[in-house]
Amino acid sequence: MNERDLFLICDVPGFTPQIGRLVSMMNYVRHTTLSAVAGLGVDDLDYLYDLQSNSIGALLSHIAATEVGYQAATFYARDLNEEERQEWGADLDLGERARSEIRGQEMEYYLSRLQQVRAKTLAELARREDQWLEEHTSIGSGQRVNNYFKWFHVFGHELNHRGQIRWLRRHATKMS
Amino acid sequence: MNERDLFLICDVPGFTPQIGRLVSMMNYVRHTTLSAVAGLGVDDLDYLYDLQSNSIGALLSHIAATEVGYQAATFYARDLNEEERQEWGADLDLGERARSEIRGQEMEYYLSRLQQVRAKTLAELARREDQWLEEHTSIGSGQRVNNYFKWFHVFGHELNHRGQIRWLRRHATKMS
Image (tube, rainbow over all chains, first blue to last red; front, side, top):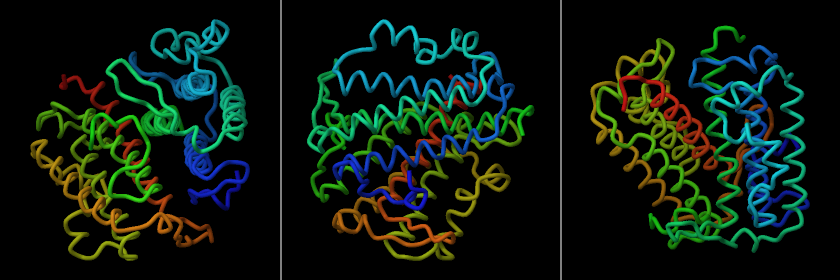
């Protein structure tokens, strides 16, 4: 991402106009997520504020896992397959399993997962046209959900958890 | 907002295409903010988790106040005037002043403020064309910030605080 264009929601080379705007928003959100965790060590990433909380590491993995889920849904019209469930299950579900399994990793582990998932998302989005954003599926209640909404939801979900990460970082006395 | 279209980012009657998509996102975010606080009473809205925290009521006011700030910046190319600073200063600044001043109000107070501000935003957006989203100003570092980014930032900021509101609601034992 061009840092100079960080605060522009606009055309992005390699993407159709609407998809470029979506990518602009995704890029900015990711930039702020990474800023929110900059400099944290393993202890910080593993820190559990209380018994109901998720660690910042688990939240980072959850952000990547959610993106994997939406890749499957929107690019391949399927749920996660068995292999993906194996790899991402704890990250997706959070809670007790994540608290015990997602621990002891350096920041680089989380950044690498985020980065690999995002690279695939961008490659797939680059192959699509704006019209694809309008394609929709229906959910139980009969409501339609289009692809634009699904990817908006991915970055909105990231922002929501970034808010929690910032709160955790501010309140966890072990952290700088 | 048409509840049926809640999960569609698409054309919205009365707005140009890009602005309509922006409005779709703003509408959805607001829907989830209101869901996050549904049913809370005065004690819940005033609850301070600890000495550094903001109450849910203060965060709701902060969401509205931020929107007022961006209305001034993008619709009128100015900062908040004295009257607006009087009305929204504590809500904008949060912290100590908000902790002492923003208290004792029913939910209706916060919903009314959010609603009045949003109605003005929508009225102003309806009078503009997509090209307006591309207009930009520059910030200190020389980076350009366009109107699309500014309004994306408004709903992203809301999502960030909604994440905090959900966390507070889950952790505040006084709340249902």
